[in-house]
Image 1 (cartoon, rainbow, N blue to C red):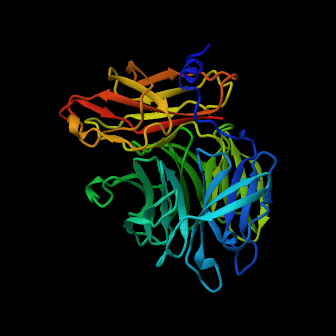
Image 2 (tube, rainbow, N blue to C red):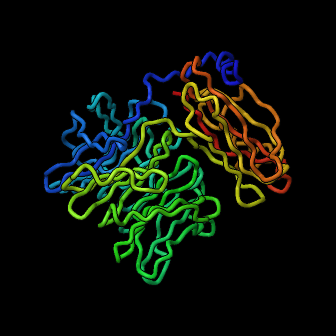
Image 3 (tube, one colour):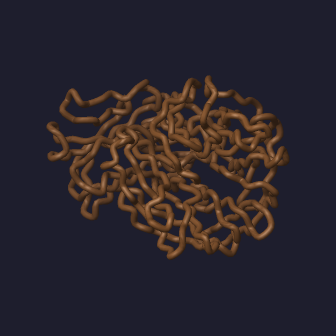
Length: 441
């Protein structure tokens, strides 16, 4: 009996999911152009097919951004492009239920009109809220529905965004020729310019625009950029240091540029939206090389894409600041599916850092507990621990924590967090990482 099997027996595997991941569960969206086309499409990056979902009508034909609900394998969140309608309308955010090739239900989440916004550019799930990027602002919207709360406003003509729960990653103009760079800001203190950090600038002599920003399965960030000479790259960047880890030139496959890229965490394939010489569509890259040439053949652009497959580790919550840089980073080494006996967590932190590993059932703690009263500043306890044990980061600064998942287990959502000793960080000398969810499907 593996460690995780014993743990599931202890907690009765109370958080059970209802459906099995499938290889083709990748959805892309694109708004109609002059009333033609548009909708939500099932993408198979291995076969190279794109099929329109049934049951998509009305506002959903204006779908511009999409993200999966990580805790419900049939649910997605969709943002629309009001400027694509004639006459123009305000955009909306929906929660949809989809499966077997169709949309079964769509529920509008914003209770008031998003006046002043043209479209929803991107949206991401952070705990019980959506972080939405519109044409004019970044805002929070409860996943249960409600009114948006503005985080900050922007004037970026081509905005892009992703988040790991602690930081938001955005594109900003940062050079005299109008080129954009990847920046990050702290979601707990977004208007403090001193905490904004420039992470990565594409190195071109020509003006360059960042078209898409998405988190990779290993916690790094994909940046899709294009210069005005039609050079298009997808770069993998370390979000802690800004170091360029990989760059794939996709200009031959997407002659007129790419818009978004997403990684299938099971296969490692990179699925990229963009435009070829004649049509819009999707390309697949495997091991840095073209695997499936442009398919789909759309007359309108695809603007959003996400994968329903469980991520390696779904991060959310606030991690308090350590006294050292780069900050501690936690991620899963693979997808936590049933029967994955090699699954485990990786913690990057300074060598000889001691601390505690905490694990609990997702949802057992309704809200994080602020630890400021213990002298730990803005640190939070983000789960109700059912199990904890001491850890020590070895030489090299990389701790590997095996958590094998037996095929006989029930599906479950488990939360993990590290509490690490850091004498210089605060009065107590301890910090906490953000919470990660292991979504076993």
